[in-house]
Picture 1 (spheres, rainbow, N blue to C red):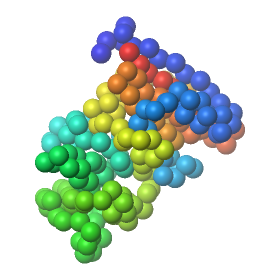
Picture 2: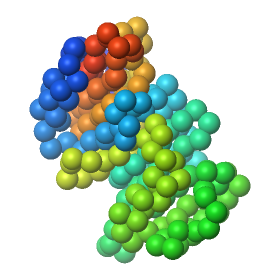
Picture 3: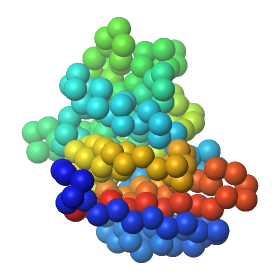
Picture 4: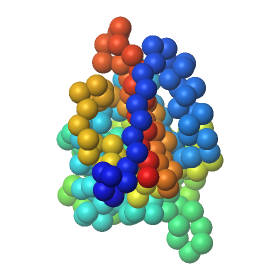
Length: 204
């Protein structure tokens, strides 16, 4: 997508409630991700690189629905929804070093490679519980308050568009993001106690 076809709007809010109210009004029914810890947020400096890498090596697929993700500088973990034989399955993928002793009794081992271990679950709740058990929710985003989880293809597309233009104003800790076919919106936590919440929207 060229820069000439991309629209970009930014707003700042002194109040957290006003920032989130604007976010939800703009999101409408679009799938969204919200930070598990709304004081810490999700660090975005390496998020796009982690998404691109996992997609390039085949760990995540474009049509995966992202129910939970932690995209850190050293490790990344995700819980995604996939379709197999007409039914939904939920897959946890994460680094082996993060996996606690013992396999989750609710899931079955999908693959175990030197860099990543994956489990398959029938129920979303069991997959999400395992994700939170492993990551402790630190720096994680969860798909909540929407009828459908975001597709990986839309998250990659709009995160790439977001970071195509450098911004000295934009903070790095994401509080919430919505992702649709035609655009996406992001709320970032303030850089400091007296700084504003930052909302940025990109679209075609």
